[in-house]
Amino acid sequence: MKINVYYGGRGLLDDPTLYVLNKMEDVLKELRVKVERYNIYEHKNEIATLPQTFKDADGIILATTVEWLGIGGYMQQFLDACWLYGDKEKIGQLYMQPIVMSTTYGEREGELTLSNAWEILGGQPCPGLCGYVEDLVTFEVNAEYTLIIEKKAENLYRMISQKMKSLPSSNQAVKQSVLRTQQMNLTPQESEQLSKYVSNDSYVKQQKEDIEELASMFKDMMGKTANEEREPFVKDFESHFVAQDDFVAAYSITIEGYKNPLYISVRDDKLEVHYGQMEDIDVYAKLSIDVMQSIVDGRMTFQRAFMTGEMTAKGNFKTLRMLDQVFLF
Image (tube, rainbow, N blue to C red; front, side, top):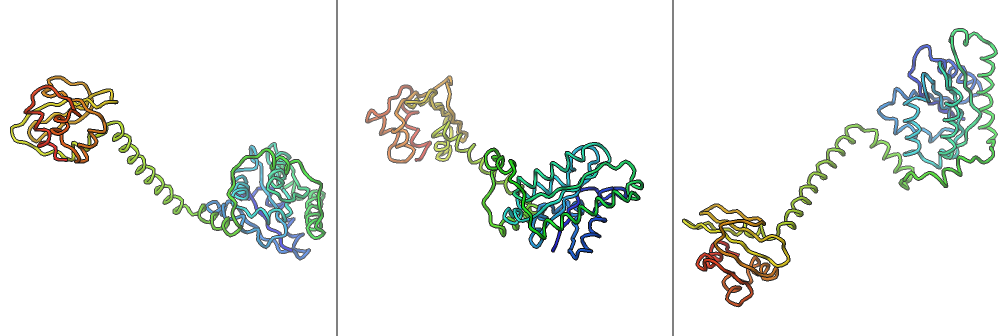
């Protein structure tokens, strides 16, 4: 038989939980049980991988100390890792005994939290041990307390060896009907690999940087597309502009279906193109969006559109004819 111990305290010399664990381990070893302890604080950068150590265990002990409130951060992270990355099939076969000692208030609540968590995970909790310790020396020399601790270790051994069952719990019903946490359907091998990635800080950091870079790139692309949709044809005129010496003109082209006209200002080698109402216009023109698309696609010229009546215009006609020279589509 093998039993793993997961200790969620801080490893302080006067931690009563460590004394209880040492006594229980002595009893279990006398019963020829292989005991392996994992101090979670020593694995704080790889807590996500700890559920993979369940593989060859028959049972586990979850032990922690209540120093002010709750089961402590290390133990909570460990339980989160079990929920996210643990092999639920293996967890369902594991007996778990909670051990919670406190130097303040809350040892019973802590024991109940561990038992409830293990049931929700699908495992089989065993009767645990909890207690309040005001003075560690007095606690250690009390023979009755030592006997209680030893009996708890024997009970755990008995439950595992006899594969004792317990009555159904409402925690499992709650898990099925209420909990809505989205979980990925991963094989045990995939869960193990994922937990290793999650615990690798450099890998996670690189992934975050890659995601931020991709998000920024797509944001720029979407912003560019949105601008082009808001101001159609602007890029077409800018990319096909041919500068003319000593030529200055301002055009206002109304495209059917658009609220504001397209304003084009040419001043020698300088070009300004945008939508809006402007003053001092040399040529006013009006056409449909299909005709404008044909012009920028190179299938029609401004001169031809005007001559066929597909574009109307007023103003300086010499300046109008210059459109086909200033913009070579």
